[in-house]
Image (cartoon, rainbow, N blue to C red):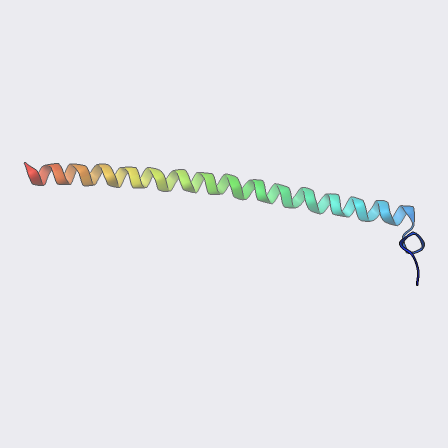
Length: 65
């Protein structure tokens, strides 16, 4: 059975490490983009809820008067 040293040359290790770094970078960028989209949608939904709550208060006040 070959050891890892025998199977992997320094240049192959560098190439593999570079590929892994590239994938990690791309994945991190995607995650950051998803987090931004999530925050924007969350704020949008919260604003919508607040608007409906205000509308409900207004309708309730109008019905009581």
